[in-house]
Image (cartoon, rainbow, N blue to C red; front, side):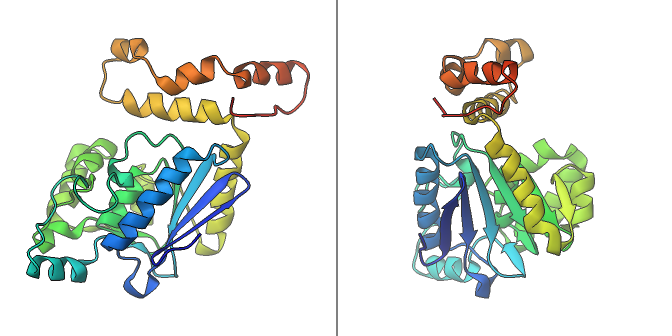
Length: 265
């Protein structure tokens, strides 16, 4: 399935989502956001999909974020600029504020991941980057704000002073620095990027799908909870996993010395 700005494919339980506007470094316009929203809906609804790879087309950028030429035109037309989140905007809720997406998303990053592109990376669960990847939130230099979660996620994923330095100056971060700070899982030469991403998706597909969804939900929903409250909170995907056939299949397969057969039920 392909739209005007996004390519969407499924293979072997993995969905591949490619932002496909390489001529503008995969800048995201309103049409792309609308297409992405339909894709995320489909990802969540299709139980055959167990993991997602999000990337950008071409060899220069993952995404440089908002299409500023479109934004300038919309401003001239009197369309009010957005603030935090995507409420009232095309594609709502976008990945950056789609807090109930239960499938793990792997960011495959090569080249520039700037502005909203970096915010997408921050919203992913696993990040694999090439050595040439560059990250940054330049909004402060443009009279804008990293409103797709950058101002909230970066201080949660970096030490506060480090995060504030990048947020307040718009400075860029290379792949090695991102790895040092734990913002990415692996950095590899570009020639090895697809192989490394495939290793992660293979492991995700091999895992029990309901366990993956329950773990993602519980880990993210409990981040700001006191530990005692986290234990007492109800997690719908965990309730589904706990009473599933898959919950019994794992132990049975181990006892029988065979690979488990997951049904997601």
